[in-house]
Length: 264
Image (cartoon, rainbow, N blue to C red):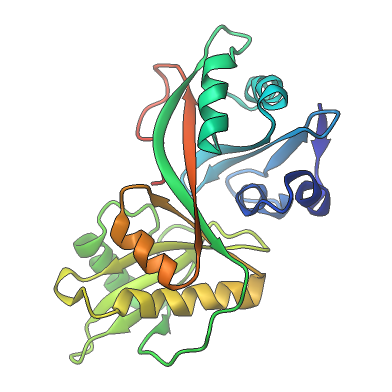
């Protein structure tokens, strides 16, 4: 295998796969660690590993089953068994049946989820969504506690760079969304929450349209992960024209790795 450290090279090898490109994080230095990528000598498979990306160590896998099976074993031996392979469900399922690491460990299948993305600019629609500043952090945290308590994205996380919100007639923050763990070329939508008493009014769409639109304008694309069974969220993002594709995660079969391995 050989290292890949050029974004254009990665795009060529993955046919412009935005999930792989997001995982690469532009190969820029990050507080949590810099992403690395490898390809087989014939370019038939690619693996992109990034530590602490949206709170988890992830390795996006792309390519043919035969080539990826050999590559992912070498990559996991290199980066460690905390990294969770993610990719096309058919590919990941076959890898779990084929891959054995040098220490004898194998892979096990995790929770299915989805990746959604869009490159085309969004229509500019007038709404009540506005960008929020540092002085609004307590309100954002309070809304997340109330409406999305298990959100990985919080204002205190240095990898979450911006927040927007919608207020009701009394000035109370009732919807929010942010950008975090973004790549230079892909804004990553996080922390979407709508107050339970204000749902069904299109507020989530308003705030997501503002944030997603800014990501596309400033970076070139927007992407996000969503639980497969979260039909409400999938409908919301589909209204914004984000395309859905199923993704599956795996993890090294080891008692040292805990917690869910889905989209969260």
